[in-house]
Amino acid sequence: MALGLPFLFLFGTAWAAKPAPTENLQAAQQAIANAERVDAAVNSAVELGEARNKLALATAAVSDKKMVVAQRLADESRAEAELAAARSTAAKASAVNNDMKRSTSTLIDEMQRKTGESK
Image (cartoon, rainbow, N blue to C red; front, top):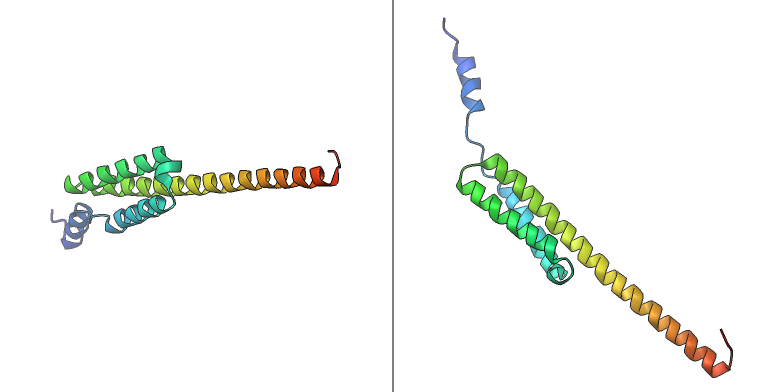
């Protein structure tokens, strides 16, 4: 019984090699670079390290022709890098906020001292 050309075409394309997830890898690299720009190595080193590790694993998976795994790892790397950047930005904002609170408190104390008022 002949299966016909359409069946062979569908069967053949199902087994075709998946292309390398170039866009996913580039997005992960960009996210890591952005995280580095916002000092994630200082404020969120664990997440940034995880992002770098997953990108390395994704690159190795491409070499091993495991494109689905490579895509997943690249996406996870991007997410980890974005998390590192967000946490670093939040840590910086918190530090600025704390500095402003201390400055405000010092200013209030100084104003009260000069006017002779008590708290």
